[in-house]
Amino acid sequence: MGSNSIVQAILGVGSQVLIPIFITILGLIFGMKLSKAILSGLYLGTGFIGMTMAINKLTEVVSPAAKALAKNTGINLPAVDFGWTGAAAITWAWPLAFTFFVVEIVINLIMLLTKLTKTLNADMWNVWGVALTGYIVYQISGNLIWAYVASIVQVVIMLKLGDMWSLEIKDILGYEGVTVTHIETFVAILMSPVNKLMDYIPIFNRQWDAAALKRKIGVLSEPVVMGALIGLILALAGRYSIGDALNLAVTTGAVMAIFPVMAKFFMDALTPFGTTMSNFMKKHVKGREFVIGLDWPILGQSTELWVTMVVLIPVAILFSAILPGNTILPLAGVINYCIGVGGLLLTGGNLLRMLVLGVIYQPLFLYGGTYFANIFTKLAKETNAVNVPKGSKVSWSSIEAPDLRFLLGWSGRGNILAIVGLVALLALFFWLYQQFRKNPLPENKYKELKTTK
Image 1 (cartoon, helix red, strand yellow):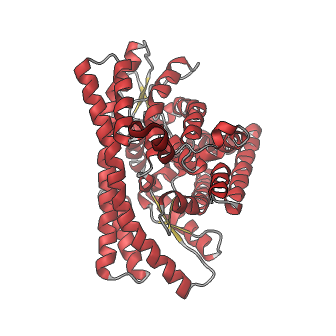
Image 2: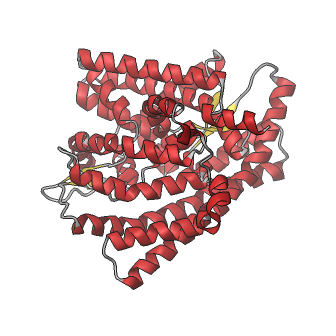
């Protein structure tokens, strides 16, 4: 059995198995009792499995509604959206994909040893995102060495994003010692200038989280009610029958209510783990702080996250119909995790900001899916991991960090505009990183906390 086959076999068990095992081992290293370490690992696995089931159910019921909405508005686009699952499948089938584990692990260790990061990334399953960047950059630039350089750049960014978000996650959800290292949060970099402008508009500086909405609109703010209303509106827009519309409404409401329940398992897993790790560092590694990088579903108890992503579904469909040059219809990727997660962490859960930012930045992902369709289609055909319908292309309507991947690819070809754009994007990232280091709470939220104390 070759090394690639071994890696594929290990990955076949899924992140819901790999990450809990990793967390259990780390828990024992940091001094947790065996029973508590195993419980933390199992609860974490339960959270991931439960969240995945809920996400899959939500995708299952809203994708046909999105398709019906598109059909009724006369949208007919050639690129088939196969979502992140299709992108992951063809990426793992690329023969060089497993080599990016080396990139991820080596860069992480170097940065930890040189104190350039405090994040230990345990989200090894999502190395496929680094490998995908490598493939995209290679296809655009024609330079395999530059593809690996680009992947190193992404890993560094992911670890620094982990550093940046750790205190924010602790503030929003109460999780200590963990963070999110997923590159999908990179959209927050492009969002940050608009979010900064919102500081000067009074309405955006009010409290717009779920708790504030509950005080204002009562039962309508409950996740189950909001989900049902959103599902009903989406169904009626897709011209569902009354029975089918009510079915979608109840199902969407149920899934929205299930997310916080599933997220409680993350709390049960990560709270004792984070406390143990924190105590270990204070005792044995004075002056150093470490956080564990995990996948984004640990943020799933945020109602604002799910409301934003579901409300933006018809927005994505509308944009796909009216944007000139767009060729992809959002279906499998119609729930845009990038906008939801990036917006949540950037704004601290300000729902109004998240929704406005989502509307503004949705076109970025559709154009990204359109641009990368040829590259995705080529990889799908080369690997035979995903079937490509005859006369069609495949792509991903909510592809992560399309701006970064595009600029990295064209910079490898020596394109001056791309190089300038990449430098500007990285400079903006550095600026936002410094802002979070100085003040991990979003400015508008910080103002509220100061005035309410």
